[in-house]
Image 1 (cartoon, helix red, strand yellow):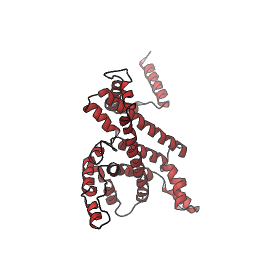
Image 2 (tube, rainbow, N blue to C red):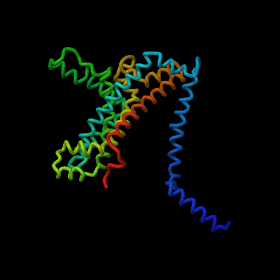
Image 3 (cartoon, rainbow, N blue to C red):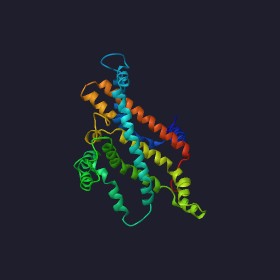
Image 4 (tube, rainbow, N blue to C red):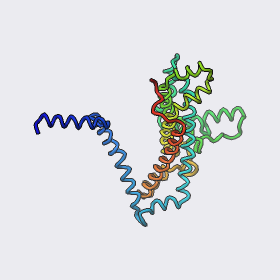
Length: 299
């Protein structure tokens, strides 16, 4: 075959691949795929295999040890009791604020900066702030005691509420920024057109904005839920790690670095991943019932 025929054949192959959405630009995905494989896929598969290699018993012994121990199984419920409300509060609080701030007004940048400042604090500083302000000797309790509203300090830290407050403070900026980005992509002329037809703001939000925002709400809830479900420092610093805030990440840590049972720790991590994927699947299923479409953006 001549060089011209070879070039023509290569060009024909490229055209056929391009028709199927395969072109040279896909090579740009290789670094990202390698990054995912090295930092995520390999550790996950390694942990999955390790969970089936207990020191004693059959290959399911680590899972049996977890599910037959009520103290261990309870960590799943403890974590869900924290992660689900925290994610829901963050999303519900972010929607009206982001909806109001998607337009242009004076001081928008300053207000946006103030709302996302908690990102820079980190979990440890947030926990320290909660202990200083809401602890038994914090200013909040001092005000209540000095005004005679309570006789004893109100317990808002070193329990369930302290961890929930911490998750809301650290998770809200992510929810706010994500929802603001989704709302900014919805064409405002749709609401204006509905207003000219007599729809009030409730009808416009329920019939136009909310369905178009549903994919963003689902994605934001999933991300904030995963962030809250992996709670560890807050559960120790402002919670009760031996009681109501003994979350599943603490159980995995104790199995690995206190009992040195890495198979059990890996099994707990796999259970943790399964629960997260189950909740995410339910949220995405809800999203599919509320909105069916490819875009809610401008244009």
